Image (cartoon, rainbow, N blue to C red; front, side, top):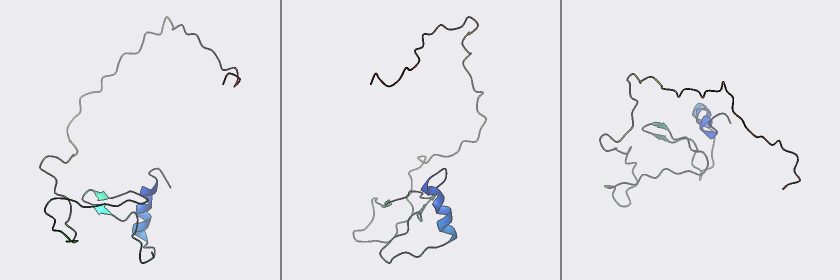
Length: 106
């Protein structure tokens, strides 16, 4: 596994199909309108929404989000980052520090 855990297995699974037992669903093979569903382990995506007929198991397609409810990338110039001024350390800071002496005080 790499930086994103099992999510990187998606790339490998798309490159080569591995045989599975008849009663097994493939992991890491789901797609939605935003890309791959990268959830490893026992994970199920259930499509529940109004307007689906009882016992109708056809794929209803992707969820239609209400207008202006999906995040999107904003393309504009950001204001400059303001940083706090550093503390005046010319005079120094007085501290009392006690170094560890062992594990006897547990």
